[in-house]
Image (tube, rainbow, N blue to C red; front, top):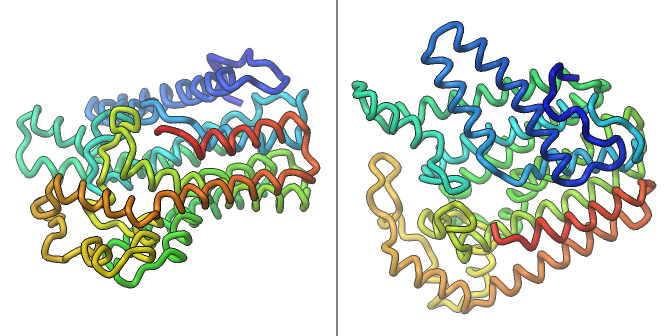
Length: 373
């Protein structure tokens, strides 16, 4: 347990969403303050570097992974178990998530995240403001990669502070491998869009998103109880994959039709790069030959990662979004989301977990898959 946690007075009964998130925030704040002080003592530039990392960790977000892990734990631990000994494990998932987001933004060359500049843009701006020599963009990408690496190391350190049996580490490691595997498939898909399919896009969603957003956090929470409840482990696995996939399918829709003032990210980045999401793959499958021809990415019009040139105009992006709508793919995707939510809820029906946790997970399944951002 962390010493001096700012929120160690949270109730032992099932915490309210706000109390739980406050406790996670307090755990992160205490841990990061110590880490920043340590790096600051080496060199002020490292302190500035670490403070930027802290800002990224605290820059909003839904804290879904710790919340799912909490309810996975609470489902077996029950309403009276004290949460403080396992809080570091929940908070560690948020540091891992920051690692994934920062690296993902570098790979996608994204400008904003949660309505703020991405890490590589922040560091590029610092490089310019400082009047440093060299290419600001290259410096920004290099520094952002190191920020992601640092957050992953911090996640390991914070996880080690939890009162956790060895099975927790095994679940955590599997989650990290699956997330990286899914990210590589995502990158590969952008380079081979013609060879991709709806099934392949769903495979990416399963590993890149469902595993480390819902499924493994739930099972990590179960592992924290120190019990080997096979039925619960299987129920969490089925629920996690179904709800996690639905979460990513909603993300696909928001990436094309979402309001950037709400999502905090530019819309149509997926269309601009030709990322083979489930939405785009489904649209191609349902399209007429003429529609499919318009949706096919012309390599000559692709974005050049070296200098950012090329790509579609805004009018072309709007046209592609319109064609996707005409194919009926968004409506079909909505149906797939509903089916997965229903499957996830059904998986919990007979699971031997406390009713409070079951109710919370059913509510979460609906909330995270019907969100505006």
